[in-house]
Image 1 (cartoon, helix red, strand yellow):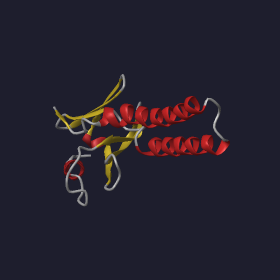
Image 2 (cartoon, rainbow, N blue to C red):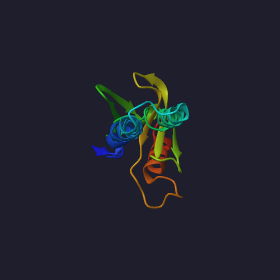
Image 3 (cartoon, rainbow, N blue to C red):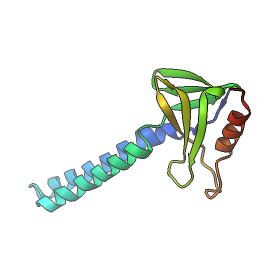
Image 4 (cartoon, one colour):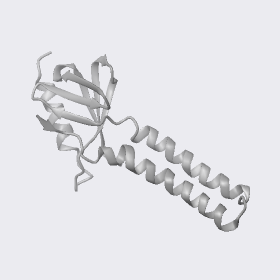
Length: 149
């Protein structure tokens, strides 16, 4: 079996959000400790807005990524936490790729709803040529087109 999802998925899903929200909280805490009192309201609103903005962006681009996708020739093994799904290639209706997203995302549109949903997104491996389609997404789309219904 070949892993087709990025090895950086753990970083994107767990480490980066902790660093993002931790840096915001640490900044506010440092100001409170240094001044010895609560800062003016605008200073609390701006970090709150930045945290909300970050949460909504991560909710759309990061939090829904599955942990790992493995290619098993005629099927894909999808792992997210303790949930494991085996999806035959013939049950994949389409493959979408967000070219300029960070992290790069591949979305599988499934014929049947699984425990992970009817759409499964995973982080594509990083590439140097960002302007072109993902080789993994292209390969999957071609294999799905060739698979018998």
